[in-house]
Image (cartoon, rainbow, N blue to C red; front, side, top):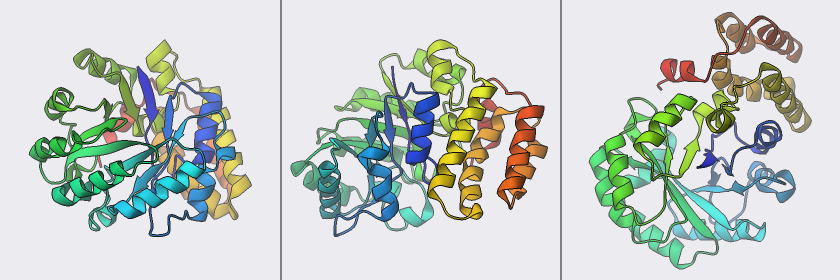
Amino acid sequence: MKFYFAPMEGITGYIYRNAHAAFFGDVDKYFTPFIAANQFGKLSTRELHDILPEHNEGIVVVPQILTNNAEDFIRTSKTLKAFGYNEVNLNLGCPSGTVVSKNKGSGFLSQREALDQFLEAVFSEAVTKISVKTRIGKDAPEEFYELIKIFNKYPMEELMIHPRIQKDYYKNKPNMDVFKDAIALSKNPVCYNGDIFTAKDYERFSEGFQDVNTVMLGRGLIANPGLVGDIKRHCKLDKQLLRAFHDRLYEGYQDILSGERNVLFKMKEAWFYMIYMFEDYEKHAKKIRKSQRLSDYEKAVASLFEERELLEGAGLFSSVKKS
């Protein structure tokens, strides 16, 4: 089984990826937060730093592109190719309202004729391998059966399927009936993405889908950075290892960000997920959230690690965060 780390805007940038690879590894491919393609094929300063080869040494990274304009996608692909990337990923999965309102991300799924024309253009001029991360539709699961006809026209490196519709966001359960049909219908290799928070979740999935050999993990892997090790080797997350990972992440953000507020914002984003690995976390989570200075934050984190033990897996996160 191959394991991919899903992109998460605001969290899984190069500082996070390098820290994760240093302490946990086990990930076959890391996908970047999306690059917003533009008519010039240029990258923002943040996007550029995120994909620079010197910021991603020793790990396999796939840049993800968000756009519904074929020319912009092609230009951005050429830019990324020049930096040495041989695969790019098309974002057809983002459920954010601001993205969907522009018919991008999972909003593009409702524009099937335009999507088909887009894919025809980008695959005809492809300079890299192209993989696609998608949901099964915008408004209804039944949309997938028309979408797969379109996807099957093009030689994708992989089709990563999160079996929810856009309107679900992260609520409701993944539609495994549609995913089962996707495996049977897809002419491209299929990767599964969605709601694997613990090793037991993975075992249940793999028992039901033995022909799937690639899984993309997102929120569950951010909550429990050692999840893949647990799946592969039954290696439970060690609190000292998690603390060392945290410290590397914290130091990395302090190195590149100016101002305490910006560092705190980044760390609080990560704690939104990781806090659920701790028992009786509420008091400590509140202190972390309310921290206004790095000194307050450091005290809150130290107290958490000293006073609370880890739970087994990130199942608690899945039970309390369904939005």
